[in-house]
Image 1 (cartoon, rainbow, N blue to C red):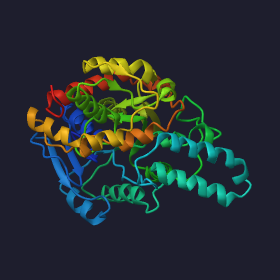
Image 2: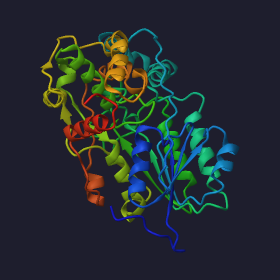
Image 3: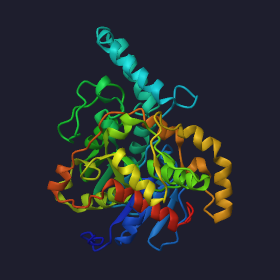
Length: 409
């Protein structure tokens, strides 16, 4: 990176990272600080930070007046918005059954031609799918949080120049797949792929960003599954996989793949949280990134059948391929006492297992047995050049988690 650039008044830029305790936000704070920026790290419960140029601010973005008050002492030039209100809500509170979830999708797909003859029925189907996946936000909290923050940054003390906003794969209907979304095609392309049916708060926030832009420019980022570490951010494959492997080592058992053959063979992409951070910093400077949307993943998709043996080998485990996969929800619930013993035995950080790993997240993700591939040619053509592979993304995180005492050495 080239180092933070001063503005026309000679002052170093000041970045506001909203959602600084999360996976993407934590990586952004670290990358910006290393690059010489002044950083304001905002979260409901921000992580304490002793770095001189990192200032933590505690505020709930749903409280607009409080946000305006807490940010008044700073002069924000760049916003890095990584917040997502957890609108995902399982309609069935029992542990997810992957086969049942897939069966529901197939039945809905068969009924879709008839439902489309009755538009309210089709809308109800897509509304249910959006609610189940987190694409729907009936209370409008994600829209309200971004709006409150943009309103606060209109104040006289700020000189906003660029806004980066993170959304994700549900923009392309990744949660619906080809059975429920007839126009679902991969690879996903930023300016060509159509919007999917059903409620989707990603669209609301992107449209709002375009309406608000005037004195400042914006860039939208659409990552796939983000792999990284953030306090209380268990909804990611990286930390969940690391905890799973640590438990398998303690149990002296092979690393059993948590999906089935269909999952093993489909093509996916993942996003390194550190790559996303680098890309946001790049976009804040690159004229070609102004007022554009970009995918953010590695250049090449992966298949679990190729990646799983590499992950197992990194942990010095044997890979295994059970025919029906593994219920990660049940696995983590059953072995939570063992995790507590590992924490005590190895002096690990005291993150409870449910704040580090989510079996429910993995199980529901395994219902996706279709390709979800992102095209990265737009970013590459615009000048971005950092694309770690899926294997590099996972193993770099595993090493970080070991080095920082999150998982056993």
